Length: 147
Image (cartoon, rainbow, N blue to C red; front, top):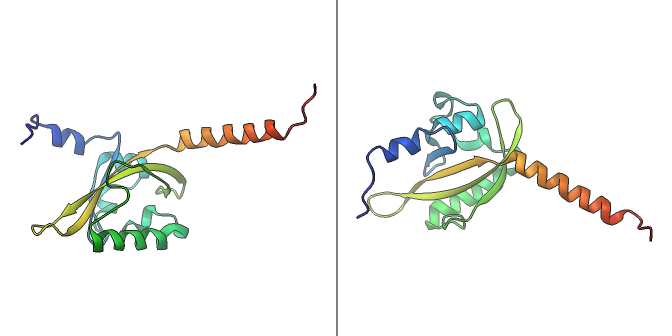
C-alpha cells in the first residue's frame, strides 16, 4: 500500500488549477472542483446532477456519448492509460475553448464500470499559438522564392 501524505486528496480535489470532473455511469456530473469552475465558468451547484452536454459542443455530443456508452459497457477507454485527449469544450458564456484531459475509470464493488473521473486543463492559448504558427509556415511555403 502506498503511503498517502495527509491532506493530499483534499489539496488535489480543491485545487483551482486543473478541472477535476467525476461522472456516474450515465454521464451525470457527481463532482465538480474549483478548477472546473474556473475553466468552464459553471459553479458546482450548476454542474452537479447535469449530463456533460453543457460543456460539450453540440456537433460532438453524439460521438462523445457513443464513446462514453462503449466505455461503460466494456470498462475500457483508449484514454485511460495516460494518453491525452484534446477536444473543444464550451464555457458558461458559450465560448469554445480547447482542453486536454485524461480519464480514470470508477468501478463498483464488483469491478464493473461505474463512472469516470477526468482531469482537464485549458490549453486554448497553446492551441491558438500552434494554429497560428502552422498557418504562418503554410504561407511561407506558398510564397514565391526569390533567388
